[in-house]
Length: 292
Image 1 (cartoon, rainbow, N blue to C red):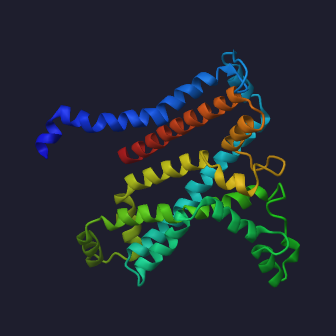
Image 2: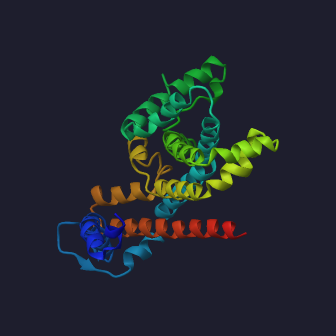
């Protein structure tokens, strides 16, 4: 095994096929989209090179700017709501509670369910007539708070983000849980001998030990939020009045409804750059905190 790892020809033999496949399905489309973003093209007729005009128009488009804000709100909600909830659940499970395996499975179930099914489920929850949410409000005499949650522009954004955050709580919980379980048990035993309680063990031992996993989860949460599409498409399609519009939804509309391939490609490239920039920023933030 060690001889194979030192053999550069063997390494290339195994790496190059995967690299070529990755280039074919990821890198080539990125370069194609970059080229298309400099064109005015409807996907059928002859294209026209317009340089940076698509990018200039993007940042003059108030709808596009609004979609960026919405996606950043979702990213912030994922980091400051979804991840803390996931961390608390992971710490509770990692403490060795009764039924640990069952709870771990239950929390992870939403992750493996199709996003379309999740969206249909929450549409029933939010339905203005027979929805679970309005029914519960009515049971407690809070009829004044009933609303058409997905049809009201003031509530639609939060109504869409809640199931998106809920769906992946179990995913991050499992990552935190696995990282916590990988810590040597003797450390916890020594801490308890010194009189540390569960809260102190969690804050002073577990969380500092799993910082690399926390960084990975923050990156996953942010990138996933910036690329979110399916739940929004099924629930609201960016409405009402574009209140739930995000860049991916706008890109889809520009391609398949307006046939603006060049403009939509510009949005796609922006999303890629945005993900790369925020990933680098997150890595730098964690690097500086580790150096302190």
